[in-house]
Image 1: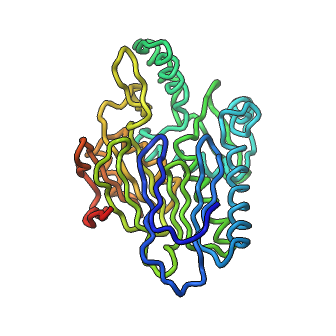
Image 2 (image 1 turned 30 degrees about the vertical axis):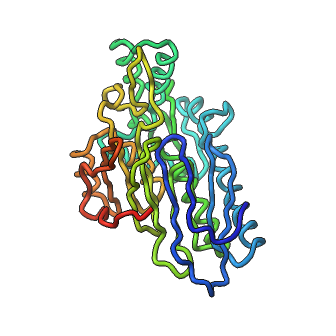
Amino acid sequence: MTSGKSTFQRNLIPSILLVWFLELNVAGATPFSRWEFKEPHMGTLFRIILFAENFKAASNAAQKAFKRIQEIESSLTDYQDNSELNQLCSNAYESPQVVSQDLFDVLQESHHLSEVSGGAFDVTIKPLINLWKDHARKDKLPTPHQLNQARGMVDYRQISYNPTIRSVRLTRKNISIDLGAIGKGYAADAALDVLKDNGILSVIIDAGGDLRLGDPPPGQKFWAVSVSPSPQRIPPMLLHLSNCGIATSSDGLNFFKINNKRYSHIINPNTGLSVEHSQLVTVIASKASIADALATALNVMGSEPGTRLAEKLNNVEACFFEATKQTLSVVRKTSGFDTSTPSTQ
């Protein structure tokens, strides 16, 4: 935990990109100080940067936010046999299961994003991910037959919902659900709600690369967030943002290596194949959960159809970047994605 008004913070996000948080000229007369808190959750490091009058107020609010993240993790994780998600996958084929509000909301939001993306985002993709992981360990590609078998087990439409009693039913046996591409964003959104309820408004939450921004620092109009692919050291792109979620999808650090060839860890649910284009996709949305899921979906879709989809959605902006050793260039972006402000860092 740290305090003070450090003007430059850098965080290496292990699976996505390099992000800087820049706090510009916070007014000296403000009674608020900057505080930072970190805890490991959901297989990554959650970092909360906030402004509060004193350490006690900041610490109490942050601990409540982390407790909320822990509650969500215990429900949504697929790494614990007794988690609510795994219990659902085991029992919901025999009969509908009443689930927590968190799990129901995440699954329903996932379903909607699957619908609008034509299945480019699909939380039932786990059989394909496991297939690629297993074959990467064996250093050989999955066969077409194996891909077809795994792909036949992937279909978000096999999950049905009853909002009246908050129940979920699986219409086929052996459905496996992986919420890794939306869960951290959802947790960041929930943590922000807790902080707001405790009077903390100027805050940014880093959920292992999925960012949820509240009000900007005191005396400022925005958070200045700059992004750059890691590990390449090239000038970052500066974005002026507040009260939104932002996420980036890239295979910069996460990939499979088979027969000395690099394959993206991003799998197309419709084909079962590793995504071939190597681009960095940044999505800004009203919530971190939406940005998180759409970053994956648009990466699967590719720049042209992905940008078209983003243009149709409310409160969503997206940009496809291509990185070389010297530059980060825009391939395609939505009309409202502002990349005009040059970084000074």
